[in-house]
Amino acid sequence: MTIGIIGGTGLATLGERPTAVADSAETPFGLASGLPRRFAELPNAVFLNRHGDRHTVLPHLINYRANVWMMKNSGVDAIVAVFAVGGIARSLADGDFVLPDQLVDYTWGRAHTFAGTDNFLHVDFSEPFDAGLRQALSRSADRIGLDLCDGVYGCTQGPRFETPAEIDRMERDGCTVVGMTAMPEAALARELDLPYAGICLVVNPAAGRGLVSLELADMRKVVTDAEPTIRRLLVEFLQLVEQPG
Image (cartoon, rainbow, N blue to C red; front, top):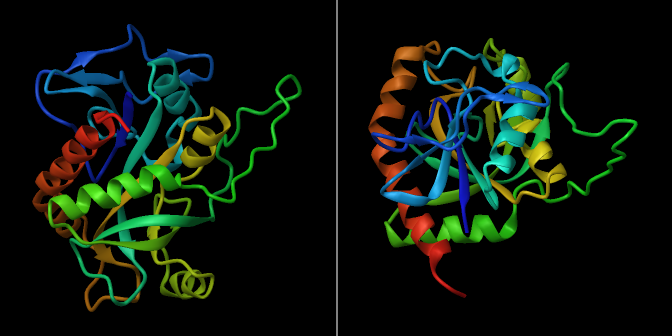
């Protein structure tokens, strides 16, 4: 089983000396964020950074259709996405991990489907994050002693952060964390019959939830500190899904 891993702010790479698995980032839907890559030490994983190799592609400008199509065309059987998010639930702290089971989409204007007049699609999206992948990620977290809690991912348009009033609204809607990249990524994976799950790293309290203003430098430090744990979790997960049965 080959797993596609899509990273970004929460995971910029899986290691060193990667090998590209495609000759070009061009797809029928335009350019993907970059070339998917394979690492010798993780032979059953293909990695793509949704923000580009230099982290220059903002969330609302990501070509999600090209990225997901590229992963499918690279032969992956499922996708695990890594997200950096803000904590809406007051029980969450910086550095906590959330395994979302539902999402609410607040984005607009993004190319969000492969459907068209020649490709009539109405996919069931009642379970946006695949239960089997979530179970495997949860078991992997248990093996390395990492606490994962369930939650609801609220996806906003970006690139600005939200207002406290918007976060209050999202809390009323049932959202636990807020990010900018799960949609339409998750829905596009469903349209291509790719099981999809996500790992959320809380990098800051959402607007109005903390005592200080939101600072990118503080968020990047949380990401840097957490990246070894994310890699350990993914390595454990990849070993688990390789096992027969």
